[in-house]
Image 1 (cartoon, chains in turn red, cyan):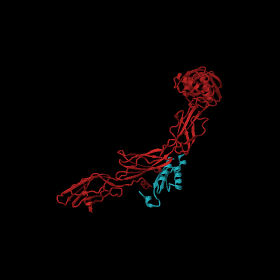
Image 2 (spheres, each protein chain N blue to C red):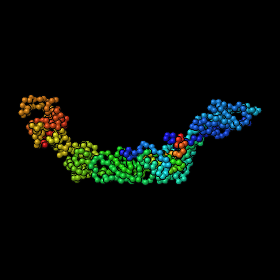
Image 3 (cartoon, rainbow over the protein chains, first blue to last red):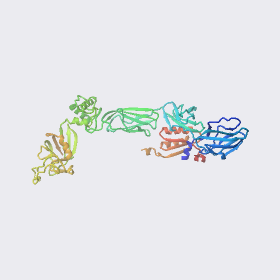
Image 4 (cartoon, each protein chain N blue to C red):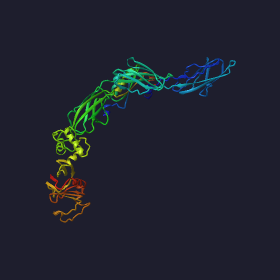
Length: 499
Length: 78
């Protein structure tokens, strides 16, 4: 196959000598030349023959090529001198011929000239790949040897011809039809070496047609996938933008007429989606839609922006009315007034005023609300809520079946850093002594006492007990968790314990 | 996905008489299935080059080659 392929881009190698200088011959002495002197082609190397016409009455002829005496290989006859097997490579060569004239007053004559051997086909320039264009008038251009003649035949019998200048460049104008066009080139250099090449040009003025799959409703994901069909063009790419910015890492290739583009995460709310499909010629189709992203019903997990709706949006509106200076603004949907309120709130808090409710705005809004410690014994979970909204949840250990944690409404009554453990007034602790603060202390590093005697929330060094019923009624937490909770509650913070 | 849609991806196909008729349709189908197609023709290069252009426009790969497969010397040429 390889040899087969090399035949196609094979160049027709003409081999020629051009005589650059020809000394003027004086008197009756004769070393005349047949010009142009041609070398015969034989295989790839230049194993040609050099010919010169000889005058008459010459003897002791000597021939030097590039300073090498080749007289022994020279044959004479019919007034001609012929050198076979000169094996001349591409480039400049010198030949010198000297002879004695047999005529009176002739003496010895010597003539020399140089010539160039060029067996290399010119390059065709530019790649042979198919070009796709929209315009009717195009030009076929490329770069080859200086002084080469480029002949081209295009569609509908169009012909063009150009001779390259010093830079070797050529540019030939053609009109192309809708569909596939072929321009055939024949490039010949001044030595007569010729190469053929083909330029394929597809003219395409028809835009691909894009239809998007159902996307007009709300999306219940924050990473929506845009799907669609593209007709009329293969190899088109889709450029997807949301709110004027690219929504995919790179243009999406359309495969077998179907488009599937996964978008970068979008915040909750309304977005302007624009999908453009572009074919290779640059023809475009464009579809724009309004997207509503609604990823969750619980405030606190998704970033919320203009157009968001649902339970979390309503909750945010309530918070903004209470603490963000919002007046009115509706109950269901985050509108422009709410976004203005968010921006004012952000500026007040020294946050970037982008109008989006993310974790920073959320915690700033919620931080102003009264805390509530909610303990779900069956789920082994303690949840800190602010204004009814969960902000943090922690795993806990609860009381053993013999010493169950009491349920009901309690309050924080006491907070201690690095508490000392004192045996409670209970039968199980009757024999035990006081334990000072530090590793091994059963209360860890923090104690949050409740309004129920001997029942508190505290740390534990026995982290393995978290998630089990292990204590004598207290709520145990990991050391880091209880230290975080400790900073969030005050004496008086309500605690609700339920099964 | 690519493998399923283009079962011949990475393979080469030589279609003799590929410039017209059944050969042309065969070459287009092979290219659509992902094969790199050599469109073999005898005589006029134009239809073969037009076919190559159409295949490349649709994202395929093809070249046109003139060789008469009934002539052993042309097949071995080069």
